[in-house]
Length: 203
Image (tube, rainbow, N blue to C red):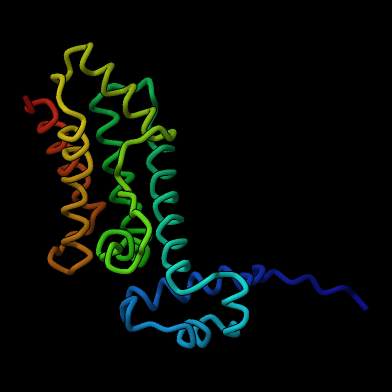
């Protein structure tokens, strides 16, 4: 008998199914309206299996948030080059930000719209904080170079990051809430242009 080769993708393991089901439930019906039996039903994992992988519902929510932040920041890190000028960097950063939101709508709703401080006891890190990870180091180097070359004026870090991330984030939130007709990728060039102008004009 000829061996049959399956072309189907490998099924996700219990942990991945739990996280996927939880994300959908937290976004669609809210964290407080979701209980472990709900997650069990939608993930096709027993309650015992859920508690084997996670301490409680809060730990599931925290893991989802941390993983989402990391996925988002990795996407931006890959999109920019430390040797690029300010204009190229801002364009690549904004396009990557908006593309990520459009391609990962459910995750974006969880990252940007959920009030995590209401149900996570641990300190909640902002996804757009520019720290000492690869994204933070790249952006810091690019901004310092842009100041030296006269592409923009020196300014407080909080102002710079608020411009670079705040403008695209404002559109993403409106889009996720259904207040805009155009998609994030459609407006990416205009948003990038606004960010660049704001950075150059900030004093």
